[in-house]
Length: 115
Image (tube, rainbow, N blue to C red):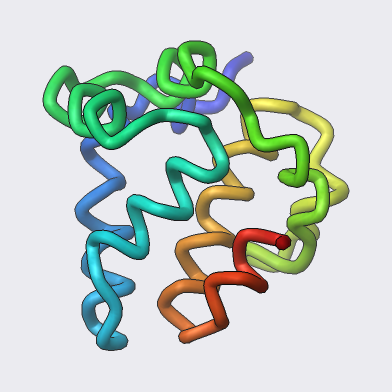
């Protein structure tokens, strides 16, 4: 059975990503940058996914190009190592969570973007 987060609209979670970053003094632009880096969406495509209430499954299925360095994203999210998640979609969602966490924690953008 598919996890219910897969059918959750990306737009339902996106404001929480923004709030998390902004509470720590970071910006929407930084959050958008890491999401675009991961998914290959341009800003227009990202804005459209939010406006159209695209669910996570469709959001990632329609991602123009998953970043080839996404596999370098490691660490814990909710007590689970992102590199050990078996389901590819769940892993992508958790990668995005991890990137937003790193923005909120003030990690350098070059480090977050694995460059």
